[in-house]
Image (cartoon, rainbow, N blue to C red; front, side, top):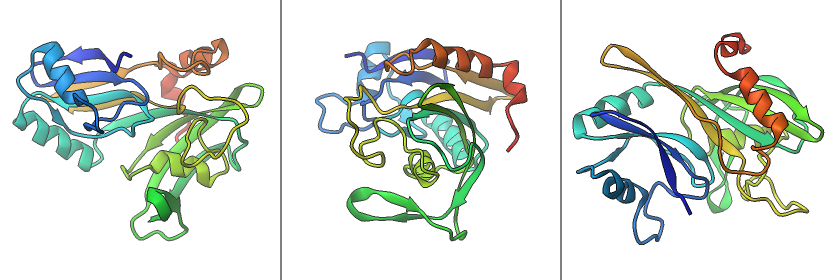
Length: 229
């Protein structure tokens, strides 16, 4: 099974498309993802500057040296990196677009829930559409970086992500993956704007023509018209 594909490579960082079901940590695997990439690309060392959940596929930035790791990590921590995700749900959301905001509270067995408190809220802007019957496609822009943030956000509006075994619950039919994908990234590096966009390549539902067409409609320059919710 392919664990990643290379999207971009510079002397300071790599951008990869991580496959779904692959942990960014060793996760009991004989070889961790970073170690595998280092061996494949003959890199001396790689540094993780942000994370994706195991079920989530898509764009992941890896620093090639400690100075780049420090700068990039700071950009993520200070919320200066623009991040866009896409997700699919087979449940009807209580609202189609807007802002999902609230404190996240740990529940049992490693899960989280969104509360109405606003002391240190998780904040997500989103827009959605229905490209095919019974299916809701979400465009998500997290403005904070909390654990399970997007998965909990969609659960909170009644539209848990397909294939999310923690938050969606049982389904009648088998699902081939969790349908959350890190689609777009944009950040500044040494005075230049770096922008990356990567369509999902794995997942029967993501590869449906109606979904692929909607993603094309959302891409630049059409992306400039994304609702500023």
